[in-house]
Amino acid sequence: MSVDPAVVPQWRLSSGALVPAIGLGTFGSDRVSAEEVAQAVSGALEVGYRHFDCAAVYGNEDRIGQVLQGFPREQLWLTSKLWNDKHARDDIVPTCQKSLADLRTDYLDLYLVHWPFPNVHAPGAHVDSRSPDARPYVHEEFMETWRQMEDLVDRGLVRHIGTSNTTIPKLQLLLRDARIAPAANEMELHPHFQQPELFDYVLAQGIQPIGFCPIGSPTRPDRDRTPDDSVDIEDPVMVAIARDHGVHPAVICVKWAAQRGQIPIPFSNRRNEYEANLEAVVSDPLTEAEMRAIAGIDRDNRLIKGQVFLWRAGQSWEDLWDIDGTIAS
Ligand SMILES: NC(=O)c1ccc[n+]([C@@H]2O[C@H](COP(=O)([O-])OP(=O)(O)OC[C@H]3O[C@@H](n4cnc5c(N)ncnc54)[C@H](OP(=O)(O)O)[C@@H]3O)[C@@H](O)[C@H]2O)c1
Image 1 (cartoon, rainbow, N blue to C red):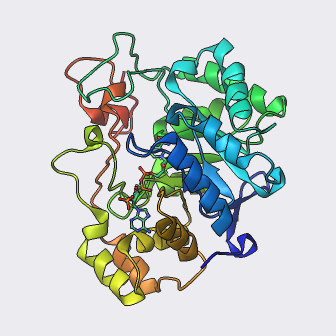
Image 2: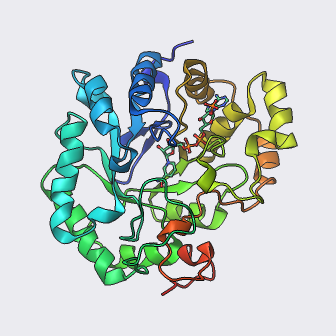
């Protein structure tokens, strides 16, 4: 069932660059080892993926780099991300260079600020744990970080820069002050969390949305689960459409994402799954009625709430997401 990479749709960024309309996620969710993620990248290359969503904090870029080594670089789209503990002015260039060295490449296609907060926590920390050094979003500090991101573009180390886990109020300030605007925004997007306002806003600004947890992350770590979370792939609408297409509901999540205009980056280390996800974007499109039916099942169900990045005791995770249109301080 392998897919010819030449037939995988691509989106054109504001720079004119083309990016494959699906990528493979590479976060093993504390469950899949770095070695197994690297094997998935290797298998994904074989079945036709050319876009990989990486991050320093996933702890596997070195193993992924070993797999990518020798593959024609111009055929790949590689994204990496700056982790929260490396926002300081002097950390950004060396941190990017470390990802480049680990991934065995001279440049990244896209480098994202993983979260707009410089707040860190121990790996696997409980959702109630708070760093004593955690701070709210401070735009002037973020712009210091962004200036270094722009410097990475000037140096030719990265081709595009972007944001992740951000909000409209924060993007408005960034677009006002940036010399180089974000080319893409990575955001949680799945049928039960469609973020229509932010989605429409980034598109209107010429920023490409990249959708993480496109399947609703059914295997996410326990710390990212709350009792009210819903399960996209069990939604009766998704199940019925999947039955009609003869595929798993996960594949319908991917089809919907690609047709809506976001770039899904599903993860799987099972070959049949990542192959089916790639096949989803080149075959058997959803009808307008099916797209409308999925648009109707949004539940505003954010899964990755980010509690560990809060900066004060007694806060609610909503404070990270500027829900009332203002940046919480
Ligand atoms: N920017 C950010 O802050 C951020 C945050 C979270 C994630 N991400 C990125 O987004 C990527 C994807 O997110 P995610 O891995 O959390 O969630 P996801 O892609 O929504 O869900 C992945 C899980 O879905 C199942 N699955 C995948 N394809 C399937 C198929 N065809 N049929 C049936 N089940 C399927 C797999 O579970 P089984 O193995 O049990 O089948 C897999 O572990 C990450 O790897 C990472 O690169 C970015």
